[in-house]
Image (tube, rainbow, N blue to C red; front, side, top):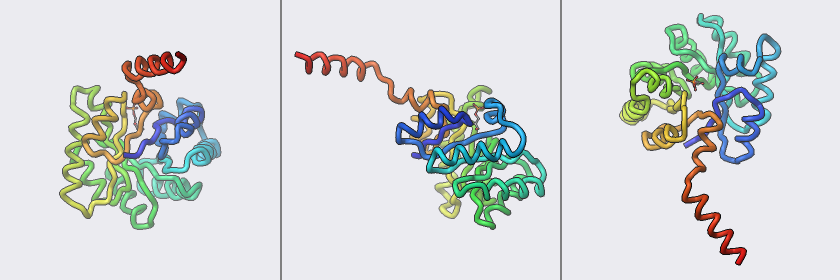
Length: 216
Ligand code: G3P
């Protein structure tokens, strides 16, 4: 399972990369706005800065919602750095754009996916990644992990689908473990969820005992 960090914050990306277990980064317009990154060339420079911190895929989302706009933006984003993956929303024009990018060999991440039907469409269009938002489903009293299981089952039925399941909108470490059980290829997580995987009280108690015994 690959670990991506879901942030545009350079310090958090640096901290996660220093752990040695980081495989990539996902961003979105909300995460960019949270860091105060707006307008060009600031947005593009920020993606380059992220790419220089992590040797892995970096999702950069298009802001346009029409086909021509998405193609123009996506091609520009893809030209910024070899690690850029163009993030495209799950809308009708987005499906057209995914197919266009796929035919041109530009890697994509289909975002805002909330149903198995949408995940089938993304795979048909040749998306490199599909991003089901499990936390937002949970927030709406729908089992998000069940959607990951459903998509994994469907994709397994059709080996010609090359799309990787990128579990997004992860809220905590239990989500990561459950996505791993469900067969997600990637989990994109807040830094806190990755660090929380470390935690177990018996580890702390055990280490304290070892250290105490070592000092005897
Ligand atoms: O980047 C997409 C997704 O992970 C957003 O998560 O926490 O805004 O639902 P969240």
